[in-house]
Length: 378
View 1 (cartoon, rainbow, N blue to C red):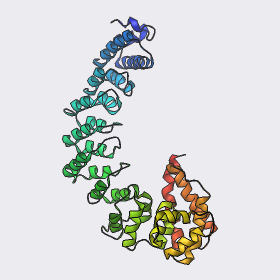
View 2: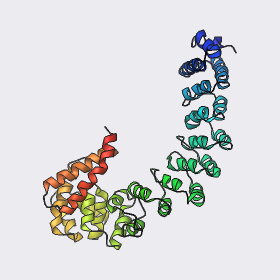
View 3: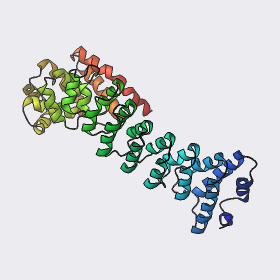
């Protein structure tokens, strides 16, 4: 079909520059302009067919610069015809990478077709897509390309099923880049977290224990020196624990549920952990402990605290911290929680001057970790 059907969207000058432009740069600019207009327009079926012919013409252009203009301009567009997208994906890296990274029209079978003859740049582009299905993840694993596998490992959008995790450990356990990359994921199955411990670097281990809840007994063992190179902050793990009751029980079994740990956790805003700690130490249910801890009157917290066996000298600090917590609303975003922790500690320390110096120093030292989320929030 003739491009005349698009005369209300495109000028004859645009078409002339695309076909007969004096340089690759001129034709690339014309291609970019045409692609942007086509993507923005509500085309009729007839116009869409004409647009397809024009895009195919651009995709076949001898100049890489022109083809890349098409790839970059329409890399996120749902209006890029699938066959044109696949042609671009099979092109050289400079042309293929944008659509492989982002194009929503490429399907799993298209990505697998590319992977069968791809180089590292293309594999990495596919591994970093917003969504990578399990079948494509397995194809990336089959490539044996550690760089691409590490990109997928760090990508939350890459769906690793149980078999994929097994393959990654079986085939890449000696590849530090791949093992360390898994730590960047926002969630890891506990069995995967546990297996990673013996395969990752010191730096990655520190990130792992700060970002992910470890199995309770493993957390305690690391803290007690199972690996000398690991320094595990149990206060961090208290806040990350998916099962606070189990975590508290493990701490107590290993004589790690100390008054100082409870106070520090409270000053860091880990209220659920402290509730379970009081329940465990007082020998009562979590529900009853919750009611006593959050009793609006003066007696509930005192009653449960006295049953815990914690030192009487720390009660005013615990009381002050809970008073501050009850006067504030816990935010849900990361930056808000950082501000909450800082305000909680500062107000509690100001309200009660008898908090042990070592615990104050600990809480103050943790303020530095809140700088990053606050900076990101502006």
